[in-house]
Image (cartoon, rainbow, N blue to C red; front, top):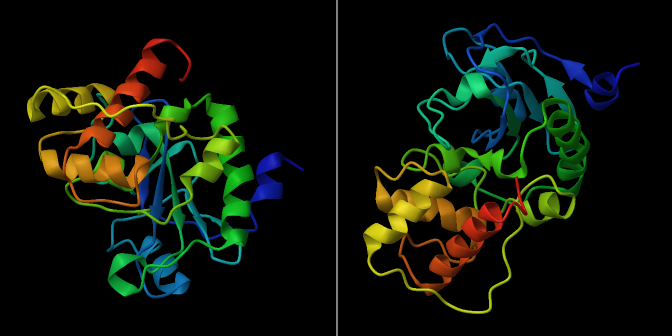
Length: 236
C-alpha cells in the first residue's frame, strides 16, 4: 500500500480540473468557509461552481482526495506568489473544513491538524517544496482572501519544518518610508498592488495577534529577519 493510500481515507473525484502548465512548487492552505463539510464537498464537485482542491480535511481528521496531484485544481483563483501568476498550475491545494469568518470562524481541531501534518509532509517531500512556499490563500491573494486566517496554527507546521517559523526579534525596525517596506514585502513574495491588504496578509501569517494593515516596527523587524534568513541560505 502506498503512502498516499495510508493518508487518504476516501475519494470524491471532482470534475473541476485541467492540465498543469507548471511543475508543483507550492502548497496553498485554505479553509472551506462554508456552513458544513458536505456543503463544501458538494460545491467542489459541482461543475457549475468551477472550484476544487486536491484534498479536503474534515474537522475529525478525515482526508478526502478530490483531484489527482498531476492535475491543476481550481482553488487559488487570481493569485500571485514569488513571481508565479498561475498559482493553480504550480500548487497543491488543501481545504480545511472550517466555517470561516463569515459563518463562525473557530479553532482548527487537533484531529484535523494531526491529519494535515503527515499529508503535507508527504507532499513536500515528493515535490521538494521549500518551506517558504507552504502558504495560505491570503498570502497568494491578499486583496481577496483571509483564509486560513489568524487562528491557523502555523507554528505547529514550523515545528515539523513544514513551514517558515516566526523569527525571534531582538529589535524593532522602521523602514525609511512605506514604499521601502512594500518593496521588501514584494521581494519576499507578496503581491503589493493593494499595499494594506498585503500587510494584513503578512500579519495574519507572522503576527496573527494584531492584524490591522499598519506598518510598524515589529512588522519591519519580522520582514527584515525573514529576508535575512533567506539571503543567508538558512531557509528555502
